[in-house]
Image (cartoon, rainbow, N blue to C red; front, top):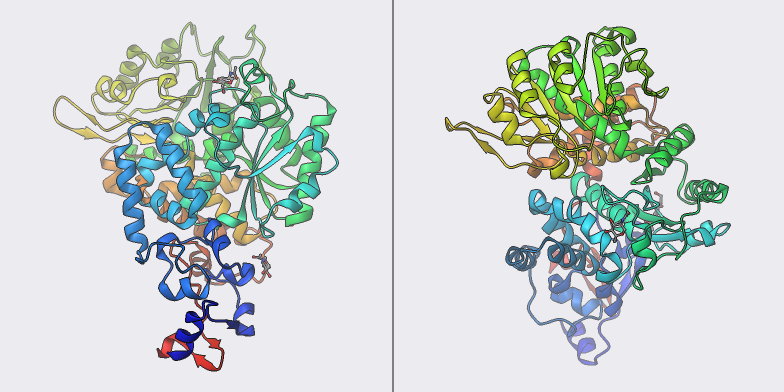
Length: 596
Ligand SMILES: *[C@@H]1O[C@H](CO)[C@@H](O)[C@H](O)[C@H]1NC(C)=O
Ligand SMILES: *[C@@H]1O[C@H](CO)[C@@H](O)[C@H](O)[C@H]1NC(C)=O
């Protein structure tokens, strides 16, 4: 092709005139370039458009990057292999985190490719527990900022800060104020790692397009003395503002987000202090499209485990008696969702509540107890069943079919408790949900060995498979919220849900439990393998989209008739876009790659 050669030789590169119809083509899953029209080096510096050495020769010439890369053209497979090999050599999780985030900063699709291909290994790196460690070191390992930083000094100007964010079509925001980052406490602006990590899972697990996701940290100061003395800290050097100004700031933020990105923008609150988390959830849940993963996501994933366990036990949920260790917000969230599940099977609310008991640091929640109980707990306060001095007494007297630990107070499912559960039940259900691993109420090994392999066990932190003396192997379930929130988010975004009701989380739990195969259940699993999470999330989203349309909660019209096709068509994948237009005109010649 002489035109190509001659203009190439002149060193100007061929001029490309885009077909107008091409630039107006609806953006299905390709062609970011249609909006940006970036060329040359900036295209390579933008992680969203960069393909590294996977730019084809034609692309390199047309885009003006020929010579800026080594001559070889690589496939994404090969690129991924390079990073996978390097990751395998690393032993330090924080080092892996820094390395992975570096890929994200350079080549987004490749990052997600690497992450998704080994999600079971890498989820604990980009998300808990390693992300927590990374947050504590945020100012020390800092390379490039990700996400949006809004401080209390920006009050009155939040909208203009949002306008600085380069993406115009955001549909999901994850926001934290850094007060209670995982189990680590107040990390102030260092908490940014959490929204970033959470949104990585939105994309990796549910295929939500990364440009539609916006991580935000709100900086109102920190009460963490270590950080206030750290010269590398990156937030305001002041104590947390707990005045009205803080509430006003959050109000302004919520308003600015919907004003800019639309009414149905999903806003997920993450790792706020407990007090604020509940307050804001109550305050905003009817006004905005919002949910709190620590409360609602946790409840949903726990219920899913229970529904799966009930399949193994062969008793409907209405015949179970549940004893909680812990009576805080997590316990109440789970309990309320269990009540909803029981009511769906025909029980009254009062009957369902009677099936649920709670035991906290002062003992069983019973009428007339001296220690104070709050109004949220009232529903689960019953008449005293007898003389309960300890959790073991409670187990022996109440005879629960399931015990659920959410107290965060360490190994309180003692050997006696576990043995008692094994004696009382054919298949006892034992959930040790407190995080991290050293706070779990018992280990997987204890649960299986002390119940002779009879129990159905799930934990909040991951435990490896347990081999029994007789050779049986059990794979414990990890009640990871990542089974729930990405699928819920995908469904909510796609169907234009305005308010996410608790029933959505009930449906999500059912959709998750359904996806567990009988074979997996036999292995002791209560959740599908994490390696399968993309498919699990997408199927859950299909179920939820069907549900919200059926219940009139969806606001995106026209209603898609084929919900499955609708969801699957939007799921983002990590294949590189082609930067070559279908047809383009060289000076003087018409050139079409298809007829080439
Ligand atoms: C304070 O910050 C440090 C460093 O980030 C962290 O390790 C620690 O857990 C925090 N402490 C509290 C009480 O929040
Ligand atoms: C944002 O979405 C609108 C409507 O869906 C679309 O017309 C527009 O091209 C999108 N813009 C970008 C930058 O993706």
